[in-house]
Image 1 (cartoon, rainbow, N blue to C red):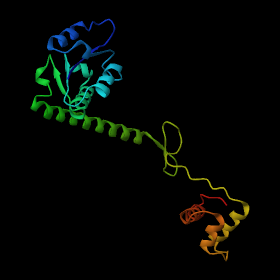
Image 2 (image 1 turned 60 degrees about the vertical axis):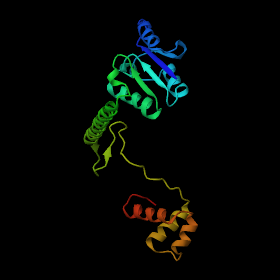
Image 3 (image 1 turned 90 degrees about the horizontal axis):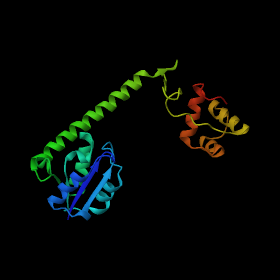
Image 4 (image 1 turned 180 degrees about the vertical axis):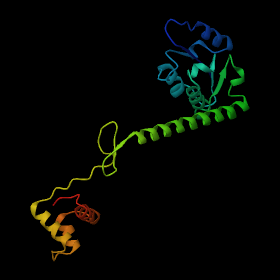
Length: 210
């Protein structure tokens, strides 16, 4: 089955030219889907319906120009790959026949460009992360402070709520002044072994007041 897709940026623009070209190619009027909206993104109802619910592997999608898929190369490539590789659909561009998906050389070129753009995007993201990291202030102990929240970065220490007698038992176990075994202390406090030793470490480092 052959389908056509039309996109115009504003209601002022006339989609008649695109529609005429698709009809002359042989696309049935009922198989032509059209949207009005910017090529900035592809959150458009008719395109989503066509790609996700109507068109199937082995079908053909005809557009007048490749820029109907987006306003920048990255978006065009993403939608090209979605249509051709993911959906298994043949893509025909009337004004740029050399860019039809039936051209075996094009797929290699498209993949190379897409990989290059993805690499540039990844490097840009890493550079922004590095700049953000370098711009963060530090506490006197060297911990990083978030530029956004003004708080120390990292997980907050878990708070432990114990009864008075539990605290006394914990302190005695740390100070080795109790006759109870470690297993008995774990059972009495109802905590895990890693938690018990973590509390001990925090206490010895002065981070836990008991």
